[in-house]
Length: 579
Image (cartoon, rainbow, N blue to C red; front, side):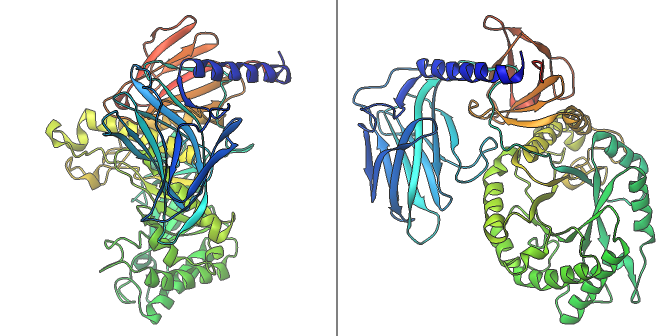
């Protein structure tokens, strides 16, 4: 059947599945009939009425709120809600970015069971778009509330829409199949350019492994103190690396950083030292003009380790502006980013890069480094992306120019440090999830830190960030990364499953003759179960590409159990014929 004939059938099938889901759930409110809103009450300056929902009608709350006086819309049933096994509350909600929204769920005694902020997610990362929220609850639901307050000290006037508030059983497996409806981002969605951090100028064997894994460039310090000698600039060692990379069709992201003994010795602060750094930056841009090179001005200037004795965004701005101006003079087409900001510090960045200067940059860089849960950066990414768009429009990219996980973890009770098999497996899982996260959020460029361990001490986290050990041998993380990037090669990113169970994520890639869905969970100590249709199923493999055991599920389906400590699962289907 041709795709144009298949589309209406798929749409009908999707509608059937949605209707079936509603039949198997207790509808707190779908806002589609005359009794809608009957059990909802608004506390504070606001009013509730029917409006446009996620599909059909929905609830529209118009409000005026501030931090100290939130507005709350609450639901209380006229009779007890039914008992449900492994109950799960879900809804669709949309709000403006200038308010904080919190979902609160209480039991019959008024005790809070759930109080969670409603924030952008991997599936719905843009502020202001419809968010799907699903949370497990422990007891019978008796009361729920949606609390709205201003993010700032000034009052905010606006509205919040919500729809399809459902209570369902979390014991049911969700299902995967070819051509399953997904949350598509746009008609075109390119994956980020992937790079890896290095610390050695001469390590061709490791660079070969990086290229084989799918990395297209390396990130490396271009140290001012190594290049300038008595006012002259020598790039011999760095040129050797560039030639090695170009021979492999790879590029480099140079970090122009750190002090010089002839110019103050540390962070350039005096007008003379700042001018000297700008002269160095201009020489770099002149020397590498026309090469496959990008630039980052300083490393983590908001970190006292790199901007001693204490970070100062005004000081950094005084260094950044003349350096970029000098580089643009030498090479107007140079690709230049601000220095990667540690931990997504928007407050610092908004003071360091203002509206008048921002357009001179090609990109703004961040170093996310969330602890143990890559997916948790979605709200910070969304806030950063919204700020860039508001201040500078669409011309400036957002880069993740450094982020990784050490194979030395904090739970020392298991022993072995960065060399233990369990810790290295955990690093591999986090590496795959990190890359899936930067792919789904939409960074233009992303860098894994680090290619190679910086030492042999198994208990020092800083020495164990590598995909390779200190001798250049592959760790499990390299194998997981290579399998993931190989799997995406020659396939197009299509989108994510829009309504996953809590903590579960599923992303789909489309090949010429197949469809790949990658499924994982970010919730520790809780298994998730899904079923995949047998028809057109090619394989189910783990994050290393090894076949996984499956069990018989519902008629026509196989059942797969996943957990956070098993890592992503790859489900490959033959695709229906396409025109």
